[in-house]
Length: 131
Image 1 (tube, rainbow, N blue to C red):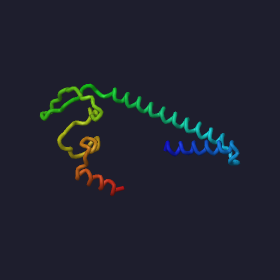
Image 2: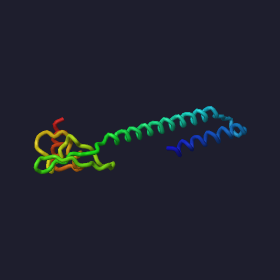
Image 3: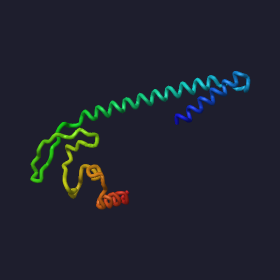
Image 4: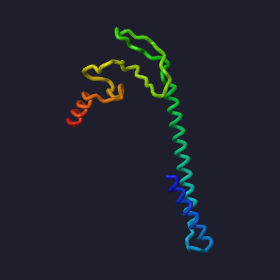
């Protein structure tokens, strides 16, 4: 995209310069100035939105808990320090289980395991067929 914009600016500049030297009867200096102004404004808006999004991600990362609850096989819970890496997610309301219980489940299974099982795919197909 930047190559295309640069090409447009160079062509407009060369054409206007050739018109000033009386090689052409065309002068597009105002169009060139407008093009450069709009491109600079768009670039500034893009960089500002990227900076704001980066700030929002940093604020979200600060909300991650320092500890997590681990549920043992006997049902007891223990508090353990949570790792601070970008790949971990806080699931304080979702219990960690080896298998999905029957009935309604508050989150999608792929959210927990990052893989679709054949049973969840068939349920998804049935739900889409009912629409």
